[in-house]
Amino acid sequence: TSAAQRDHSGNTKWLIRRMDAVIATSTQAASYLQVPHTVIMHGIDTERFSPPADKTAAKKAVGLDLSKKHFGCFGRIRHQKGTDRFVDAMIAAMPNNSDWIAVITGRVTAEHQAFADGMHAKIAAAGLTGRFLFPGEVADVRPWYQALDLFAAPQRWEGFGLTPLEAMACGVPVIATPVGAFPDLVKNDVTGLVVTNDAAAYTAAVAALLADDDRREHMASACRPHIEQSFRLEREAGDINAVYERLLRA
Image (cartoon, rainbow, N blue to C red; front, side, top):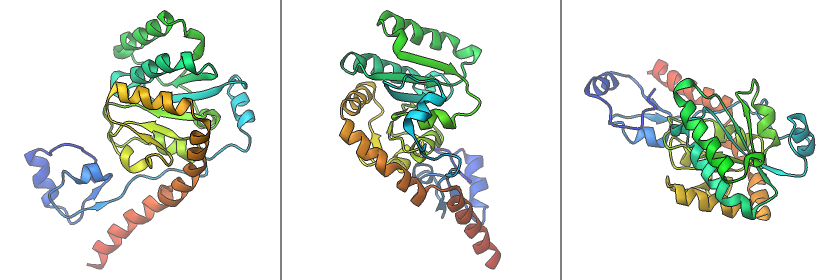
């Protein structure tokens, strides 16, 4: 199985050439392969990740303000994950969108503490400390997805990236950068937006979607059907089994 989105080393190419079959986890990873291969993208547990029966109750369950809308960014807090890009975009958009709160969950390791401290300082300088929530590393992220109205995937680099799938399975549209498998996961302008890997472009996309309830709600309605059709965990398992069965028959 190959997930790398870069040219392989000589040793890895030699090893790949000796395989009877190769699976790539995204079209981006497949573009670096020089042998026949099958693209099989990851799926998720659509029973665990599902829309809430009641959005208000979902917000209440995790202690969110019921009068506000919530835009989340989940994952380890570090430069690679683009957490600062999300923070910058929200600082720029919040003055014109007073009904939105940013929710950032995830672990901060010691080596990335200065990065996190810098974001907190920037938020405080903008006078927006009360508009950003940092619950930290949560034991179960599912109820947090269910409470959101919009999800951010602002990564600068990613191997694959499951968070957009988890958000969309919960009926939450996504604003993503074109890294990892995100262009394959998010249907642009249908279940969210895939913008260029540029801070200004990401900020503009955030501002546009925060201000457009109808567009965002239309995207939300398309998210769950998209995941059920293409990204169920059972589909991934079945596709992988088919590769092994083909080899066994041969």
